[in-house]
Length: 587
Image (cartoon, rainbow, N blue to C red; front, top):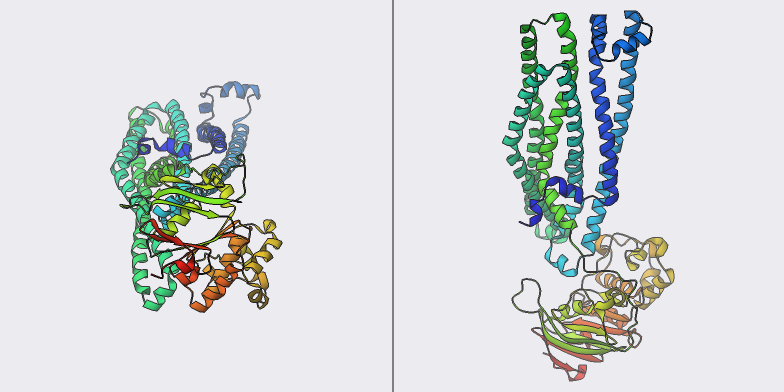
């Protein structure tokens, strides 16, 4: 495993926070300390309060209280009781209001951190190079951004905060108890402390294993869900509903089972510690009575211990629960820590000089191998495309056509060689180059949104250029189709464009590619899945653009690129033939 696994859990959690969140965490720590003081004060006031009810002289034995009583004019016991009760209520009111505020601050801090981390992780993924997405399963990325971040916030960050909070409370209460009743405190702690430690040691390995299993099953659960819904047409046609449901159900149940085991384990400390607390209290009573203490002197101390136990037991239970929760989400913390550290080489440049494609696009001695591939997809490929030309690439599947296009688009970086625009390497200002390219793939990705938003893909409404939308619609020859739509550009196309024909989807893809008026239009087997008549109509829209834009067309069939100025034939990653369409072989 990576070296990050050796780092402490606390360090990883701290590293997942932004600098602003770390400052807020320090403020939260200060508020938690104040909360600890109020918790301790609230419990500590029970002793003099009970002393007032049993024997007024007991109160005078506490430090500072005799001088306070004398300052007040030595009031009667009744007056002291009434005043003491009102003071007790006042302290608990302040404590209640402050702890309610502290709880609000804690939850807001956690959920703000969750939202920020989810956004940051999504940003990291979107800015990773194209090869990253070729190698990673999108179900795992979705799991990390949504469910893992949520689990980290709820079971990791919140548990860490609760652990610190309860440890502070325990420190304050134990200090108070030790001052008032040293022997009894030592006895109780000697029972509860080792018992809690033994329980954690015996269960931590199981909890960690359950956490790793949950993460594994959660990823596959999302994957099978995506596959079943994404391939709904094939699933229904082939009658594979039961098979997909079965695969989903297995991982769904296993993920839930791991959560159930962890939740059950969190409940056990309370039962175990309650038994030990009662046993410790009984031992303490016996110990004090055997020392010759009277019942009158024992009752206030017992009351104080009862009040402390009422607050102490939940704290100990939450400490154990928080530690178990942190063990359960350890795989999540490790995963997010590694993922958020991914650094993207893609930097949107606002400083590098911008340039416009005007003369020639040159690919010089390009060699590229996909990660873990045995043979290179492209080997020493070179070509020059003049501005305004229409160039077609043909070849069988696996010849390297799409790889060549991905390198040309800047999605892949060649192992050897360069791509130059008018003599400038596109890597010097990749964003500038990609802004000049319109790309139409074989399968158009359409969102379940309006036609307008699919043409101006990803832009918010206030940034959509209506003139550019209509220009792209006209260039893609979608005007007749648009005229027959009752809602026009506001028509919802359905998820992946399910309400449209194949030709309509491709035309929308062309309109999207033309929206920002690119200098270069690339069609990557954009018509290979269409019938001959529909392909003819789509290519007619493309031919209308010849002379106004540089056009690159990738195709299997020679007929698709017959109108191009020049053709390149690729085989096994090499260019084997170049010429005019009429001179190219039909094989």
